[in-house]
Structure formats: structure tokens, C-alpha cells
Length: 369
Length: 258
Image (cartoon, rainbow over the protein chains, first blue to last red):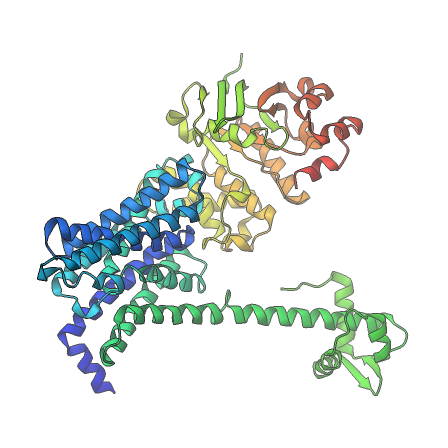
């Protein structure tokens, strides 16, 4: 097993693939943080789908398959699509979601038509353009990594430099205007950076699935922290982790597509975070609700016992019908275990601890988390 | 004669073909504590946003201490409506207050020790220091409002524009805010705040602007804030009859804004 893994890391092709997936994961994880916080998750989806016609047109115009040229086409198309969406929202009564759906489907449909036209051309070099649909990490070359690396470095450097400005934009852009930053320009710049981060992943994950890489790592990292800085770093780490794991799984199993695997891994990280995160996780919340409800029920029973003359279980059931459920006996058993009350056949008696708690409740009320 | 903190000349704002503000002419003297009142949709927030250049007016001009807003931006602080941001944003109280200093820092530079101290001082003033490291969604409405006020405080402005600083806060926070406003006034600052509770207008503010698309009345509370003007401002509103009948004491008025 370990031999297998060390072998994997010695493999040159695989090293290239892994490097590509890591670059993709870090960039989309960090910029996805902003996309998610600005509620622009779907924007990423629309932009990545819209990149397809750009790639094909760039190929048609130049006849070249160099990543620089194809990704430049993708950049332009992605940027143009976000511009179209902005104009639709500003000048028509169509809402943001409608504009997204229109642009996404029209651009993608157009791209697919162009793609099939290109494939019919009597030119052997056009083969391979459809790898941009779902990505094909195995075909990544040194030149591709170089292009991806530069794009990623530029976008991450700008994000780092303008960190506080982007934070202001994402949290409260109106206020950003007040303290003197041109928020509309920053908005445009951040959108451009998101477009770049999408373009970085197109060869690996493809236009159809790329938005998942923007959303899943960032949404997962939000679960673990309440700080933007940590969220972005975690997002990048989750993205990178998905990239590495996806690449390794696909290379150790024959004919497994890398892109979808990376997306699946990132989804598993997301699911795990959703369930098990310490503060915001679903399990933690369920646990809290359960505990609080139990405590409230116990407190009602305790105060009831304290006030009522008969200490009979049936009387409690009758007095507070709304507390009664099938679990009452269970709750009382739990209270016995906690030494809050004692039970003699059908009658209940407060213990000293129970009495103390009742006095506390009556004196200061009680705080529930 | 006094200096004019804020001068607005024939300001008209429209959303599509619907005028929200119509030919507003007011000049707010320096050092007053002015409330803006008016029914829902009267253009109160729009007025403040137009002064700040956040909304482009159809016509008219505004001057702050005799200069256009862009030249005197640093002298103006803003408290937006509490509902205008996503409180689940991953950030802390201290971080939000520090945002008020981003403008002074300029591009790229990060806030440091000095900025942190300034922010802490402002938080302390609003009784919020103990919450400095809280994520902002873990605050009560009043605490959120105080966070926004602290952020405006660190801007060290001369003119404060506040959009409903009292909206949805409890009596405790309301008192803290009122005291802060009066203290700012004592320091010679000018405050313009959108307000909803007619009962407390005369108590909290010394000037008032009564708005319902047009400026119905404008001036010192004792001269302006009278039944006749309230009637005009709230005409066509179910509120007004109750207000005038019960001498502003009816709680329906405050409920109306919920």
C-alpha cells in the first residue's frame, strides 16, 4: 500500500496532475469563500458554463490548442456572461436567478453547438476540445500547469493584497462607499478574479462541474469557523485536499474520471462538515435542542412537584397535560439518575439537589442555550 | 448666524417613474440633533442615501459644510439600517468596528494596534467591550445596532447620518444611544437620524424634518412638531387620526413600524 503511494508520487504524469488539482483546489476554495458569502454561488455556475463558447471560438479564431489561448477565450466569455447578467438585472424586471438561468443555458447551448461544428471540421487538431466539458486531468501538461499556476498566483495575490477591501465589499458594500472605496470597481474586480479561478479549473474539472469546486469547499469551511481569514484558508485546504484525493483515486483505478471524483471528494468534505462541525454542525444543533427540551421538561416537573400538594405521578400527568408524552416515565427515570427526585411507587419526592434547582429556577429564572 | 452642516437644494429622487423625494430644500445648521420622521415609503432612507451619494438623484444638489460630499467624505459618518447586512457573515464585533477606519488606512494597508485601540475605545463607549470577540450573529438586535454606532464613532466625523438607529432595540440600548447622540451634540457634531417613534421625537431631537416625498415641515421641534404638520405628513395614513386623537400616546404608532 505504502509502496503504491510512494510510487504514485514518483510518477511524473501523476505529479503534474496532482499539482494541477492542488492549484485548482486552493484557488477555487479561497475565491469561492467570497462567492459563497456574497450569495453568488450560482454566478460561478453560470460563468463556468458560459466559458465553453469562449474556448471553442478561441480555437476557431486561432486554430491553436495552447492553454493560454483557449483559457483567454474562456476568460472573455465568462466575463462577458457576467456582464450580460448584470445588464439584464439592471435594465429589465427579470430577477437575478432568472438572468443566471437564461445566460447559463444560452451560452452553454451555443457552446455545445459550436463544439459539434468544430468536431465536424476536417482538421485533426480539434480533437480534445470536448475535454473541457467534464475535464481531463490526465492530459494536463507542463504548459497547462504553468498557465494555471500564473493565473492562480495573480488572482490569489490580488485577493491577498485587497483583503480588507474585499471583506468590506462582501459584508457591507454601501458602507465601503462611505469610507471611500469604489465598491462598484471592486465588485467588478472580484467577479473577474472569480472568473479566473473558474478558468483555472476548466481543464481539470470542466465547465459543467466547476462551480461545485467554488461552492463546496467554501461552504464546508464556513461550518468550522467564524472568521473570514480562517474560512478562506480552510476553503483553500479543503479544495487542495479534494484535488489531491480525487487525483490519486482516479489514477489508482483505471478509467475513473478525475474531475467528477474531485467534486465528489469535496462533497464528502462538505457533508462531513455539515454534520459534524463543532458549532454549526447539524448533530450539535440536534443535541442542543434535545438537551434543552429535556431540561425544560424536567424543570416543569420539578416546579410542579414543588408547588403541588400531592406528589403523585398521575397528578403531574393530569396537571400538566401538555408536558405529558410517552416519554414522561423515561424523563422521570433520568431525573432519578440525576438525583433530582426519588420515586416511591406512584409518588415522587424532591431530593435536596432537586429542591436546590427549583429554588434556583424560581429565584433567577433559568437560562437555556 | 450659524454654519450650515448640510444644505440640500431642490433634491428630487425617483425610482423609475415614481418620485420618492420631490424638491427637497433644507439646510441643517451645525450642532443640531435632527430627526427625520414620516410614514413608510416617505423617502427617509432615500434622503440619507442621496446625501451620501449612494443614490443618484434626478435633480438637485447637496453640500456638506459648504462642499460637495466627495470633497468632504471623511467628515461624514454613516449608520446603515441594521437589516441591510448579513449578520451571519464570519466576522467579529471588533472587526466590524475596525471597518470604520478602513478609509483612513487607505488601500491594501491592514489595521494594526492603533486601529484596534480606537475600535475598542468606541466599543467601550457603547458598553460593548465585553462582546468584542463575538461573532456578530450572536448579538441581540440592540447590540448589533450599538456595533454599527461604534463603527460610525471611529470615523471621527462631524456629521453623522443614521438610518433608524432606534429600530428594534430595547429600552436599555435606546438609552445608551440617546446619551451618545446628546454627547455628540455637546461636542458640536451634527446628527441626522431617521426616527419612527413620534412619542419620543421632541425628547430625543431638537430639530425635525417631516417628510412625505415632499418636505412637509423643517425646523426646531418646538415650532414645527405640532398636530397640524403631523396630520399633513401622515395624511392618507390610518395612523394619523390615532396620533392626533390620543396626543401621540397611542402605541399603534410604534406598532405600525413593525
